[in-house]
Image (tube, rainbow, N blue to C red; front, side, top):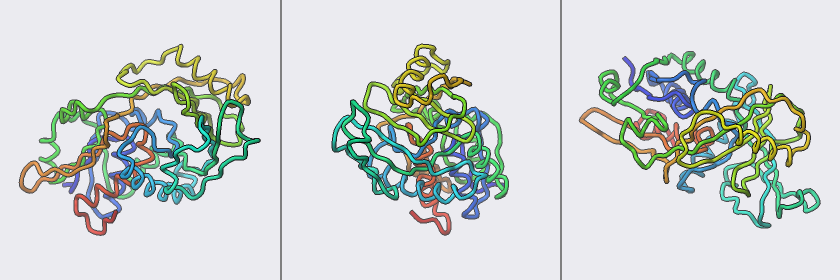
Length: 318
């Protein structure tokens, strides 16, 4: 019998399972979907706090995650790389509130700031190639003695019949699983383009939609959209055209690049990330860890560490 059942196999659930296994817990992951069919599989998965609050806790979780991903980047099997990333700004003195979590930030000289922008920075951040990183997490669970079970979870009773502790990482599924109506989708559409040599990743959140270009091992992720309350999961051709045009305008090397796929994921957003412990009955512990918005990969290891701490796992630390 497991010590803990983790519900959900997106990046938050998988990472939580690995963390608990590393602390010696026996863990089962219950998931309706294959990990490569979750919203996490659609993500550009670049380390960057986005659509997640409150800032103080997000900063703490993202700093822990940055350190762990930087370590994992030394192992090519993980699919994690440290990527030089340039971000563009409309104001000369942007609020880089997340800066304490990273190693160093370079402010680009005015001559290197593209026309139409007031400032730009360069920073090395982790990028998780989801086609490799999610399978690595799945393998890490198996190697540490954990199991992944495909099943639909409609309430917590079945999980508590299996283990005294349950960690709820169901993302948008929390709307039905625990009736959280504060949770809403923020639709994200990306275009997967053929691999193209690029000097860096690019982020531009100055307009009405986010624009990002994230090189990976075998392709380039072009984004994107951030459409609150939109639960459409089918690709939108107008969005595709807008994404490609915006990315080429900022990275001309992408002109003529072959487009391989269009994908859509629904980011699970709420006004604050929910990470808290409940005790629904004597001898039962229920930890909620969801509502990470567009920061699932960015917060994953930090939130997993806090889950272990809330469960009182031996050796857990913030």
